[in-house]
Image (cartoon, rainbow, N blue to C red):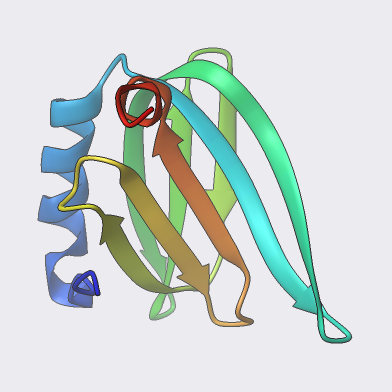
Length: 112
């Protein structure tokens, strides 16, 4: 199982993660459980990552995933989990249990 990044380490981790993966093509999906059914929505596909910003307001963290010509905000982030030793992407969970999955296309293609 992947390690959960400690909240105190989010800013530094995400700065390093953004530098390491800047320009890589991504896939972005959101998963939520509604009445016992998992709903998934794949929002974008193939857009290069620009970076990830963390913001704290009134003790609550939010993330902005920034891509070329697109951004996605996640409010009330509860956990950040790197996938496959920080190379395959991130799972970002909010305090309501919704998971945003960031994946890198080049990594996914190399697994086939």
